[in-house]
Length: 70
Image (cartoon, rainbow, N blue to C red; front, side, top):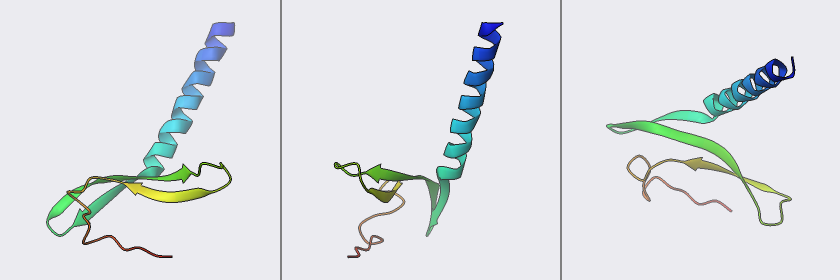
């Protein structure tokens, strides 16, 4: 009885994690290149704030496409 419940809970955790990943994956099209990126939040060293981030390759987004804001 206990192991079945544990397997079901593990299955629910995996579904929840996968649904989060599905929402965080993005499709990127830049000129003639296509690829994927991953949206996430980076936690600061003081753990009080987060910084939104897009993780992808430099083949899709290079220094020409990046903008800095203050």
